Length: 389
Image 1 (tube, rainbow, N blue to C red):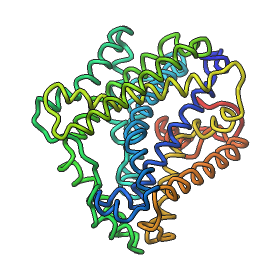
Image 2: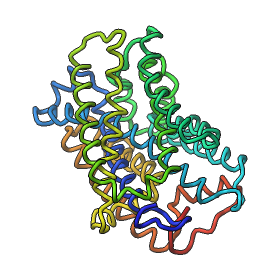
Image 3: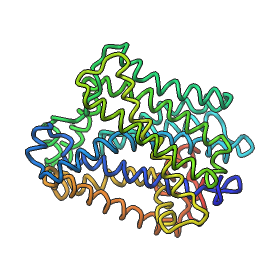
């Protein structure tokens, strides 16, 4: 699908590298919650953090919060299109198998939410992903139109519903700080369940926007994956750089205006489009940067982690608990923003190293192998070298 993906059935390792960069940002943002910083009220956080840490927190809130999740959602749709192209009817794929794939992902997400990190996104991906097999049968222009309409419909639905604007999910949750600081792992499970079942009551605005935004980005990712664009990324680098930079600037302007608007009403709800607009801008910039004529060192370094992004996502939750929670090294509430970012990057580096070592011997990442085996209802061959589908 690019210079490194010229034959059907081969992986596009440059896209794996893009996925790895996005996953890195997802890990950074998740660590802000696992570390306890996200549970503090704004006043408590300002009192605790040094000025440089507060500036870093504000930077993450403006430039990255929500954007990585949105970008990852686009990549989910893109990846699904590649799965369909590699596992067409001639390879024995079936509707039942595709549905099982999403059901298994939902089960893995439930495990993550209960035992690892309550702010799981996999269950949402599994539920909304069921749209993709149906959408894949539609003409390309309808998929693009529907994806764009869904993204635009989020702010409109929020404006018409009268629901309170989006708010940070865990902010001001001292009970979570106390529970996750407990050395009793049962307290972690109990609080995870409390957050999963109770958070939706206070963040309906966030959920409304997320439902429409993620669904729309899934479809746009599917459309790009089905198109000829992926085969032409190298030749489209210049326009992608320009359009990507413009999208980021527009998103930043919308976000700045939104933060200056105390109570958005009517048309002002469209400012919430800052998140998908910036996410798409970042994706274009990343794709252009990683699709040069030569495969650079960064591409080669990151691609294996992108190839096992599910393992990376879950592995970061496990390592985050180990480092921050009471049953582990008890760092929760002890680290500032800069320190948490450094820890997140160290965790990512460890996962990159693990991915390189793992793929010397195995075809699939560990969690990817489990996902695939449960989908096919039989253990899949895992030992060997080469790209996995």
